[in-house]
Length: 449
Image (tube, rainbow, N blue to C red):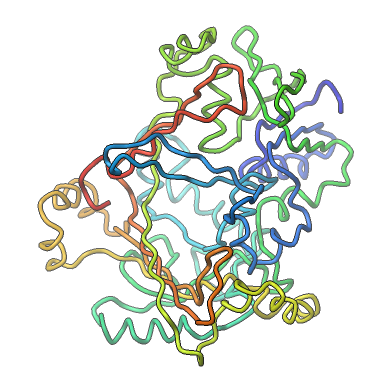
């Protein structure tokens, strides 16, 4: 390890992998350090084999961090646990690989509050640049030569098609489309595409597609199982970081940055690094004895997350599901040879087959009542590309450790654009392993989204 680099990334998740990979591809002589609290993900089966995504949320998993919120009166005095990625690649290396994009108006909303360069029309070339979209050719909002691979995955379990056929019979007013990720569709159903390489059958994540191709460059260093304590700021400029190993009582090490420090530790990591660095609300910094470098009250505020309900249903034995792979690890070995030879089969899919975006009808609006009507009128009505909720269909029951002689179909329901917000702050000024002061904010506003 060197004591000085050109650019240091404090956090090795999705954003860091993309940015560091692009920087070193453009200028291989740049000396770059990526500091990640988790472990490496390169060629680790649970990271590269799509069917094994459920292992990341299993008890004892080290590839995610479990953030336990404060107890909340809005949750009946309970707390919730929220997962975040804890390996090189961050969330992109452990998530469920569901390909979902935002709405055009989301990005135009950013531009309207003086974020120059962040409008939809300005970002669309980048959205296209990052992906190779294999399901459908010639679509104007998709890219076809980028590093991130989008596909229908390597196994067609047919349950997605059956689900959509039934949805059309039950709800003929909500159309079936071939692309629900065109930035404008907000009330339709479709097959679900995935962050999976259609040729190799491997997960397509930020680490494998952007960063790993440059690991043979000696100017790129990746330090794992290490937490950034703080950014060193001198005369108003970030000049380096302090880091410690994940072990309790680890030695504090300083490394300098000649050009830039990038704080890229995600929703939970970035606010804590900034606050330990003296950047945040002065009241919080002073509480923990941290000298104020920048009084920035917004740090750690406006945490937003969608709530999810999951319903598992019994499925006939004749249906093709992922239950044999998920419930019996030995069974997956029967599919391994096919995956290794062709990139196909159940190893090459997440089993998530269909997707629906939902906006309420006039009749449904009446049922939702006056609280939601206020939110509808102020936020949704004039932005028809914003869905209120979404539904995904899973061919099987993705519950780690669960065993049953039955087959299952699972349906997950999410609300989107929550009005309830929370916060993420430190609870200790020095200890990087201290639990966060995490207010999830769930259901703190009595509306349905």
